Length: 142
Image 1 (cartoon, rainbow, N blue to C red):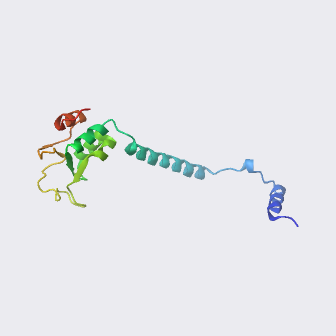
Image 2 (image 1 turned 180 degrees about the vertical axis):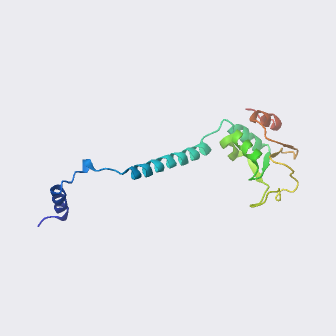
Image 3 (image 1 turned 90 degrees about the horizontal axis):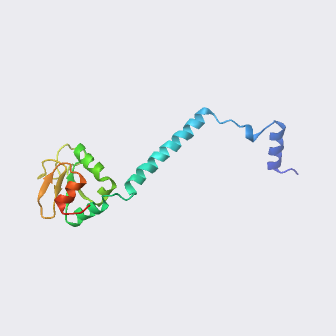
């Protein structure tokens, strides 16, 4: 009795089957390349937010002193502030002031503009600030 696997190999050999000469279509290659690029972009985005930042100590000092940042999801200036601090933003107490679909500060009625920074004593200042300025405002070192 001939085993089914052996029979398959014999039949392929008779038809001139040669695995080394198999061609991969251009479409398949492009799809594989797209998956590799897409996977690389996802990995880079994940690493960007998990790697230590040069401002981690500053962000922790701000939070430890009771500092927080009031922001809105639609605020471009808040996005600029978050870009300046990078992954260190995960250490900042960020208060969202706008409910989904809203273009006002409906969740923080006493906030007039964002980003608004609040110190532990309750005093506030507004605007995008470089890390050096935040360190000075909160009494932290860089």
